[in-house]
Length: 223
Image (cartoon, rainbow, N blue to C red; front, top):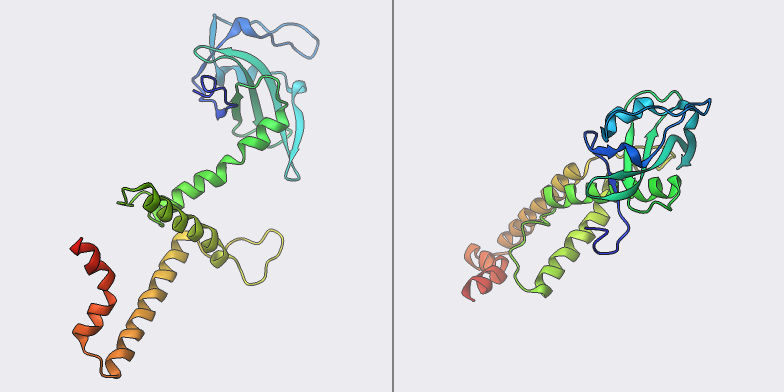
């Protein structure tokens, strides 16, 4: 779809996804070609065959990743740039395999752009799980836009409530977004109860107080 719309795309490549073996050549440190079986090979089977000497360190946020880029051809996608990345020079543990339709991009640019996706994923998780992004019943574009703006504003301010009072390098949040939402909801209910108690103490009738609190809701129901 990215190619159809002339967009640049980067994605996580699933391990079982097949590669066309005739589209690339792997060489050992001595320069000899590594034989590959069949016209297609699963990407996860290719990672152990890659020569360790071909990996290069790419520094991102002061942390090096050990990467190996390779131009390959994927059935259905055509020519792509595939990047295998490890977190350590020993090439141990789980590897990340990225793929981009921009075969001319350098490895660092591909990884730098892809890591920007993580804050987007956490935003969707928090906004749908705690902030009601997907529970709006608005129908007009204007109303939907207002609802989205409220969610975006809440998503921007809530992380401030999760930070420790004294920020130091490497300090972790003291609360999750869910905990911050529950604390804010409790504070709101407390303020409402105290306001109602104050108005009743001043002699306002309970029915009049409820009418004023829910006046906007009653107007909407009348429509």
